[in-house]
Amino acid sequence: MYSPRPRGRTKALAAVVAAALALAGCSAGTSGTGASGSSDALTTLTPAGSGTVDKITWNVFQGEPQTVDPFHAADYTPNMINSNMCETLFAQTPDFKIKPNLATSYTNPDPKTWVYKLRDDVTFWDGSPMTADDVAWSMNHNLTDKTSFYGYLYRNVASITKTGTAEVTVKLKAPDYLFNDELASYAGVVVQKKFYERHGDKVGTPGVGVMCTGPYKFAKWTQGQSISASRYDGYWNKELPLKVKHIDFTFLTDDSAITSGLLSGQIDGTYGPPTAGLSQLRASSAGKLYSGPAPLAVTLVVANDKGAMGNADVRKALQMAIDWKGIGQQVYGGEGSPASLQTVPAVYGFAKDELTKYADSVKTDGTPKIDAAKKLLAGVPADVKAKQISLVVPQQAETQQLGVGIKDAADRMGLKFKLNVVPATGYSNYLYDPATRGDTDLLYTQFWPNIPNPLDWLGITAVSGGSFNQSGYKGVDDLYAKAVGEKDDKARAQLVVQMEKKLHDEMTPMLSGIQLTNDVWLGSRITGAPAAFDYVYYPWAAHLAGTGK
Image 1 (spheres, rainbow, N blue to C red):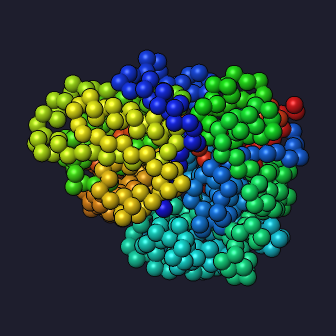
Image 2 (spheres, rainbow, N blue to C red):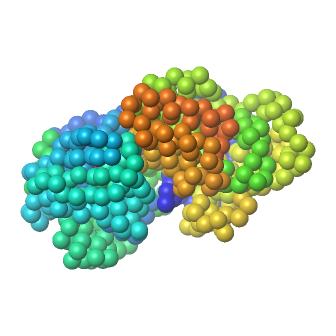
Image 3 (tube, rainbow, N blue to C red):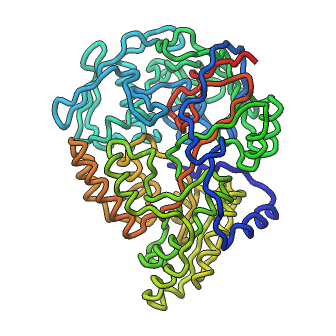
């Protein structure tokens, strides 16, 4: 489900080894800096523009998507494009809030009922109105289509029905106070019913595209080259600038080609520019690089609790010995900082005050604590310490550097450690296929959650059945179920803190790693896009406008 989301692409192994050797065993001596040179210089929205631009080119760094069907879109590339075309009942704003969108309001008349009032001024790109039938059909598609990525978020849903001309009612099997917020992801996407019924499985393909209500409409997909979207002048939300008429989304994945395209102006903008090119982009007058807050984490998932990583002291000792500060500085170009908890601050949501207080109490500077780690290991049985620990990473520059840094920490403590580097194209098999994974102990991952809600993050990473809970950890299942069914925000927040404390104390089912910022490059012709990581479900391109240059 949640595939690895590396920011960097493959480079020569010699360069990887050289950089990794520089990292191994030495912590960075300077604090993390954003694109503006300060660790605090994070931008939510870039400066607004006013001019109209006829056409821009925007690169999606992960390459060409397999589909633009939002029910099957769950990664950087398809979501970066789809977020401007297909809308959701609620919207995730650049400041990580959830607000009404296609649904104007909701009520919760009893613990097992959600009632949604819909906008009556929304049209699809063909000019036909969005109706309660379209909304109910879209939600039911997520509920019943086993191939939908977001179907698991409907696990507590019993029925979805149209209950008025602009009203849809959801009945639950059990109280679920996470479900409502999830409608700000593609769990709440709205598509045109008749379009899907007419085209079936061909929806999302190059020759068919999609039919939605967003500010940009699907225009053309030239396979291997680009996907084009055109401004929808009948778009309902007049608060968004919508100053760019046409966008070509290109699929370059090579670091050097992307950086050259940005510096030359052949590419007007991109999210996630290559780490290797950040220094050039920061120094260039061809545009501006911004860094914004993000719910992005690089972590190590415990994939096997039968080996050495099944011992809590081994896990805690390894996490303590890793130079997370140096990794954030040298591997991620200063864009990463040590994470206090397994959940990152941008996702704290309703539990922000409570989680911030707890995170501050266990905060670390991320420098390696080798002596303390060795002391912790001293009490571990010899036969456990003798077991080899294996880590698998994809064959990409950043991930290989990360792997070498982790191996160095294990070596310095005297642990037996093996780093396995596998082709990036097949890495997701290690995450989701137990046969491929075998008895691998640790897996790299970089991911983002569906919504800014800690229960969503925990459901993915720490609860039975979660797509990042490869070890089958069950330690917070009961607390999680209680929290999902708890209506009161404060009481729910306390349950979340209890879960985070247990995960931190046991350092499983993943090690607290580093939290990343989000980078966006805007060429000199354009401005206005969110710098915060909000491009996977929010119509970020509708903020773009010209600078007059």
